Every structure is written in structure tokens, then in C-alpha cells.
Image (cartoon, rainbow, N blue to C red; front, side, top):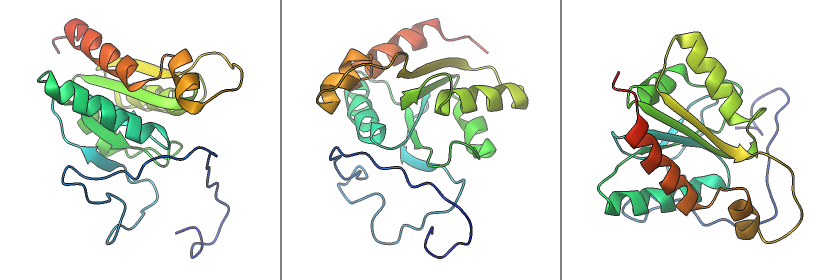
Length: 172
């Protein structure tokens, strides 16, 4: 997409290795036949109990949390949001329709995906239970999993937040 489209783009990449995201049958989700479309949200996992909006290295962690939640009988949508500045409003409305929207990111919660989603929810007049999970303060150096855990961003943390939020979810 970036190579054949005129304009300026940011392709952000970290240094840590992340597993290939697969569908439920183990096939690469972004493999053969996948074509990136600017602004489009990718459905990574199905679910009706809530929606987790995420991106980048957090997607595979969200999938791990989805697997843990499914074992408990809870199924949430996992949505990859590759374009947080130009949000797919239809996908956002669908996510809000579940009654619970959680943003799960490795960016600061006040300036990242959570902030963009909060603004879009307000502009659309949507009021699901909404939780932002992300970096709250900048820390030190270390292995990625340790750093994510120190910020409350492990898959287990996401499971806890979803379960707690579902108990408190608004009935409308």
C-alpha cells in the first residue's frame, strides 16, 4: 500500500519479535489474499460480549486473552485498528453495540488509540462501557513481556479488565 500510494506515511515497527497472527484454523490472518485498505479495521476474532480494539504488537496478546476468556465462556471481538487517526466509524459503532469497548495499546492512553476512540465515541453519541488500557507512565528498559506486565498490559490483565467490566456494564 505505502509503496504504491502517493503521500507521506508512517510505518511503525518495534524491535521485538511478535508471532504471526492467525485465524482460528491457524492460517496467517494477514497472509495470502489479504490486502490492506487504509482506514479499514480487521476483525481478528468474533465475539458478542464486548470488543477489544488494538493494534501492532498488542494484537497477539489480545488473541491470547481472547483464548483465555473463551475458556470462561466469554467471547469478545478482537479488532485490529491499523489507522488510529482515521477510525472506521462503522466498525466502531458495531463494537459499541456490544456494550463494552476496551482499547488495548502500547501507547500513552491520553494520546493514542484510546484517546482517538473516546473522541469518536463521543462524536457519534455512543456510550458503551469504555476502558482504555495503555501506557500511563514511561518506565525503564527490559524485556517486552516484563515491560507490558509492569504497565498492566499482559494478556491476563486484559482478561481481568474485561471480566470486571462485564460485571459493571451498563444495561443499555
